[in-house]
Image (cartoon, rainbow, N blue to C red; front, top):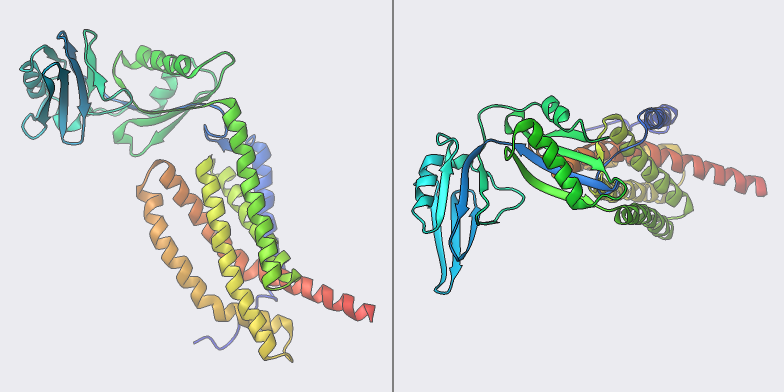
Length: 396
């Protein structure tokens, strides 16, 4: 059991110097890197998640029914609608292990003609993407399979080099050959024209049909500006409400200390986002608001303990009361931080996309929130309370 208190007040200058140094580094990086790495929701434009995969089958239909082809995790499904009703044919991958087997089963369906481009490809690697379910007709529908060869990010960058200011990121493992492509809106362009531009550039390099679009998102300039202003308003409103709440529950010194600590948490998270060039998106805003709530809760627990200790032992100095309160709350702080990390670290390692980004932001926010709750907010409370006491003494 701890017999001495953590000297929080004694360490106050070092604690604040470390915080200011980090924020100064973030400010310098912000100007050196030209700002945040904005996501497509804050920087209007097109964002596509693609996968480089070879064509294994081509399918056409020359009948008079409405035929739709869809792909699930374990089967390829054909749904035919006609005067006689709806007929569904499911081709399970377990029963059709290769692309050649799938082609043979498709050719057995009236009006459908399937050609195996690479019959050796495993049916379990069949990919579904943007454009599926697909309506079959005289124009061939290409079915892609995950290939054995890898595609490097340098190849994708070379392929879209004809598109100004296009950015490429690897999604998941290198073996998946999955990439994120983003670029801003051009004057007079539309979503369709931008998608066609990417499609043409990739087809020219990798071959027609060898690219699967897994996801395509387009954000217009008007919506992007609205999202920026709404996000800033959400964070500002949260800060104001927190100030009012803490002021009402405690007193002014506690409210200001809490607010400054939360501002530090937000700026520190933004610093890491700039330094690591993480994408700044609506997911980032969600992480910021989550950390504000987490950090505030931890700060209030400590401030509650400070208020209790001051009421119990009025003869002790405020510095010793703050040291004692932080020490008494430390076990609770550590348990909260560790249990939260146990939940989000696996997501940061094994997840992908927005979930992984959220988890990474949360890890940094958790560290900075714990730091500010235990070292910055209490020491600021000490400074403000001491200044108020001197002001009252001087007034008398």
